[in-house]
Image (cartoon, rainbow over all chains, first blue to last red; front, side, top):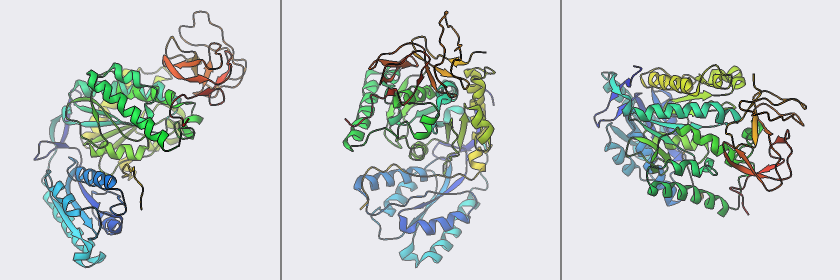
Length: 388
Length: 92
């Protein structure tokens, strides 16, 4: 397995899944409770905790429809249950049809048509049982690492992130790209001040221009709100950890992307169209960023943290790495891999990068990440508009 | 055992690899005879000035600007939010 092979599930559309999950998808906040009741009673169910669907801007409703559909078509998902109230703005029929275009079945349950919560939950459990039974014959097969799309998140950064965990993640990224995989670096607001590092590695002048425009738009959006980054980027925890400015955070953050060229700039949740390292325009909010990475088809998200962050995701296993020996000693229960050996001089950046690579291949082949073992299943989409 | 990390040869700050007390001699790879003594406590992971920096001058880490000095900074000073300011993302 050390070369470039995982054991995973081949889907009918040619994609490769690393888990067999049933996505339970409320199409509005009013159907969230019924969806929660279904997910709580089904083994291997993933609740997409969506509470919008009404009273949002058109842009946010369109984004939600697109992202929820991409979760339903995700390679880690073997079936989706869309739970609708029946009168929400988000078009649940359209959502279910978009999911049906993917590799896995979908069932739409409408509370107002079925006659209430109890009947909807009962029907949902029947559907989930059928989907689970239909997946019983699925077996893991040898698949190339090139079939993986992996996100490079970081959260709760401190000074060790830029010294150890992020450079090691960069070495991991280089190994993945060498195998032909897709790797996505997210978080636009955490790149202010590191643009030159990104543009120097852009695969073309067009991609360099897109990178600069993405960062410029983020900074302009922020300024237009009248807010500034003081007290937010870097966060209070980042500051206690020794990071002073957003530029300093950015220069440490961008190291996660390793040394290969940026081949594509992606919108929030947009799947990469080609192998190699892409940049995705996501917020620095870790929950929203990881949610966008999984929507883009990441079967696994890697996550570096200095101060310690327990986060997971509803459908993508999250693998966490810290470069801080104190955090590893104090919060190791929530973290998969210790990269502080780089700072102590016990291991090189390349050695830790290789350990991350081997761990990700094992998780892709079925070994559960710490976040999965702890039951983490976070989901929170980017929202830009007002709620009215 | 060095007690400070300097990431890039152009950097004007180092990162404390252990908690440094005032008066500690800073040691790092490729020092070239440079002698810097801390003037105040430097917590683990925080920055210590290696060179004098005038107010308004860029502070360099990772070989790039991480903001500007908000006041004059002496070698051995703790460099953080009290004397280093971002030039990005501010509503001005």
